[in-house]
Image (cartoon, rainbow, N blue to C red; front, top):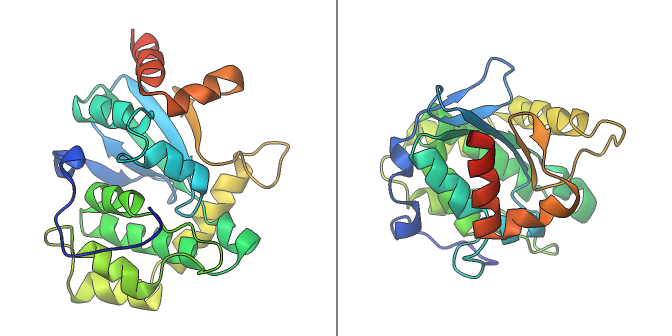
Length: 220
């Protein structure tokens, strides 16, 4: 979906996400969502403007992708998700939409609304390379879909790029995860209990049943 609407509540596909625990890890860049005692830990690298992430996250056009399986397992408290939010797309295609979106997501975490706002952001991804991605106005409008998120504190953080240092540090953490590739591992990249999903299995990220089976096999 190449646009950003607002005002309507979050779609039913995300029912229950607001009940999930969420916190910033001690490293200062990882956002952890889910039961801390969950047996399965999924590390997920995402850029809010990456079209391949859109394919992974989109629920209307790509209902068979892996994101719903991960969300459902997290809601059942069988997994927790560790997010590293990248913003490299801005440098590659222009604009500052990724950085603004990551900053806004960090502000939502402070409000205890990261999971719900993440759901709305990735339901309304803006990957248009010419437009530069998300704007302050579109991010605030999307926040209207998350009950209790809008307010002076959140709006100011989004408008002033309060968490710009977090955005920079998070991008550096993403780059460091690339190993021999200083550009980073690519998005979306998934590691389950420390093991990266790669090779032929990387395609399973976009197949709901296959990714669900992979998650279940690790848990078992």
